[in-house]
Length: 342
Image 1 (cartoon, one colour):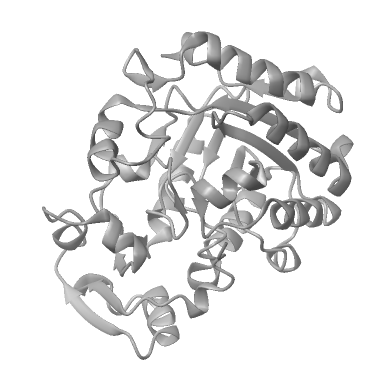
Image 2 (cartoon, helix red, strand yellow; image 1 turned 90 degrees about the vertical axis):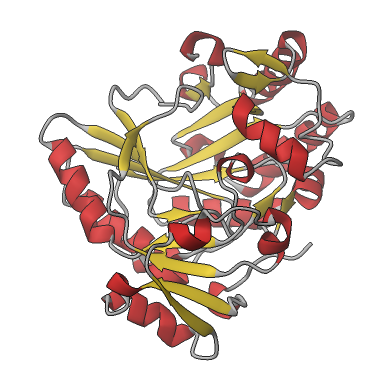
């Protein structure tokens, strides 16, 4: 299994840059790292990212990078099938679109027609939008849903900037979700109990088969342990649960590895949720990936979301719940209840 160990060396052979951000400080910084790449000026990122008849599969194998300015709204209310962890005002934002990792089940395959990666260099405008929202009420904000920000940190520095911004805004809590191996990031930013690092975990066999380019289970656990040691709140996300025939054995083995490698008593909390996806997104994914066992599974359409049949979903989630309760209190376990939220 290959992991993206350093985005500095990731082969973006072509970089499309909106003319209006060509002189932006972050644009110049990124282009300086890719002096040998072809730089192509464009008027608007959608001219490349949204053009028809693209091959997601081919682009994902060798993605291009697009640098752009986000000119519309950037902060949105959290989706009903996403866990809000008890916060009243749950939002997410997209500083980038698409992920450098390549998970077979990722909803981004259905959301976007392109496999290229977009970075919105004008993070300062997104921060200003959050500040306006904070004038109304406290905010719980997920900043790493449509990409893996830690995987892009060498290019953007966005994780450090979000952490600094959050420390200076006491009514803001953020979650940074990742499948990355990186530990060095915790040496570069100061801990804050409102900057939550959330590690998505899967059994190693599932990672190898369905989560291409991501860190191994051992690497993720090592990074999570490092984050806790440095004083950061850490969340473990067993989400999405993927059905495989020997799933109970795989997840049981995974939990044994979790307990061997991190101090589970220091976890902030954990989340559990079975695979689910918009019925519209999966139509496109099934067309693009006809041999995918995950995408072609006979899911049930419940209120517009494709989910495992109820009995199978209940069995999978109860197995995880039983394992979790062996080492963490029930009040720290968050189950994604799609029946109530959809």
